[in-house]
Image: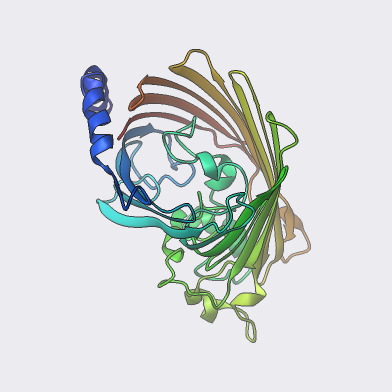
Length: 405
């Protein structure tokens, strides 16, 4: 019934997309202001996303729902302000059912806000402070719904592992089998989406190279509520960086690194005697590459991560994906992505080495049709396969209709 209702909504929105195109152009002009001889410019924009997901239980990735079909609307507002050529401020606010798709009630959040200062025109140095997406990798710059050729994130950004940030495991077996007995949101992925943690960064471009270094109040694996500076201060910061090399217009290569404590403050009483939060850290190394040629774009990332786990030892994992997008016409394009995450072994405490989680593989296929510069529809199918043990396959079907203003 929900699927039929959503389909009717999509067709209705599609039918009127062309009629409201001129209105959205006028709205864009109305929401842009300038003053002081154009030295101050501000623009308010946004997207309205109507999403529907159909999947098998347990829900894959970071989807938080105990029903098989989930309707997930989202309104996102962006504020961009430029003062002269050196000062820039941006903010992102969302009205939705949770940072990740869920069947919870509506909530309003301020996901991003940051002040950016660029002293020199050649952008060799930029200082930024606030709450903003991580500099690690090459997926984050295209993670918003209008830019992402898929509806969801790559596997490494949303696959929940046995890592917990609110309490320490008291034995290796508890660590391995905890996800089977507790609610999924008690656990963490390697990188939680775009990781809008709070902090500072410096970045810039030097010839064919670009660089970025950040200090944040939470690790890459941290949950969204940890990203607020009022929730999690800078007593145990995380340091991340990326160095990029662009040999020509077609290719772009990058190397990322990050390390920092991953436990929240409430986990401290559960740690072994004499140990504190700073003793258990997440280490991440990443390599990324992108290629563009005519109507084809290709992106790839590889991440090696290690978590220092109390009463367990080092838990290692490797995850990678490669995705390609091809524009068949100016309005229609398709995309395919192959993901995999592999887990190392730990001692089970009884003389055996066992994997600390099951290896996963996932194929994502998506198609997008852009009706106008303000409206598009996206369809996606995912097949996720457990490549170890008995195997629990999961099929996900998703649709997303977006209006941009």
